Image (cartoon, rainbow, N blue to C red; front, side):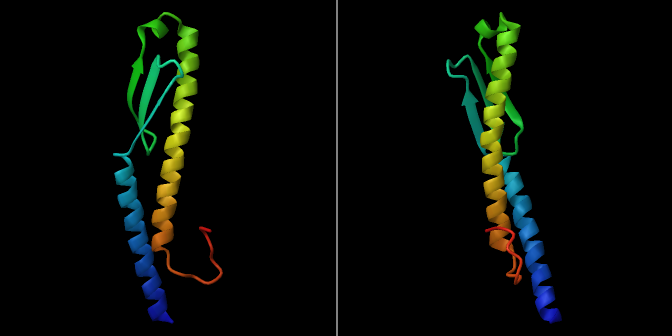
Length: 107
């Protein structure tokens, strides 16, 4: 019984290490998005950190339009980055989880 418990603990530690490695790797995965007309472009990491933002001079003349574009494009980019982040972390966790009867965290 204790051997099984120790094996599970080791597996959980391996899984935690895989998750941490995945988080570091997601800092290098870039997600790009832009407005439909290309006047605003943004690049995020899959960990949802903004890496770059490009704003057309045309948008700089209209504060309200710029704000609308920023909200729209950043929200879309964050959604994409979040989907990648969640899928990658779930895969890392699922692959390393020990088989615990009755515990189906990731179906």
